[in-house]
Image 1: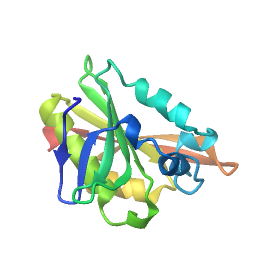
Image 2: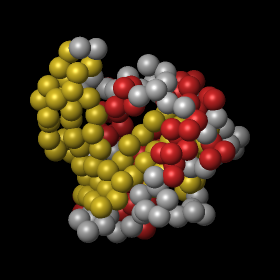
Image 3: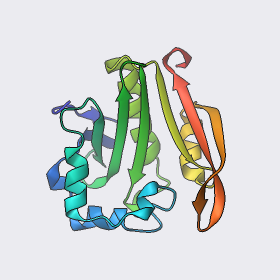
Length: 176
């Protein structure tokens, strides 16, 4: 996993490193607009908290990958996969922090690259992801990835003091 690089048309994915933790990266995690739909919105991030999170992936099969421009190597965000090998499942999480590239296919490409990698390299049988109902961008990514709406936790979280559903999506290897 340490030397893995997954190339797409727009982005490359590679293991997230300490060098990726910068003031810019931390500012993304503390930006209300970027983390609006994430549980990260409840935390105050620092470089130290980011280093701790990165360390939590050591000696696990879980993936924490940097999303970077394939040519310029500019960091766009990060993507994680929490792998449950005994069940053959993995749950993906995505953060595109660079607002300048929102809506340009970066998140979708990163999502597809990780999902395909999990199916082929990790023999995962089911990939999942979830988001709040009002996170239309993330819902669009999962629908475009041909994931199926699997479940809804009604009014499960509060967003700006209002109850919000969490939608869960999945895709099975056999559905590819």
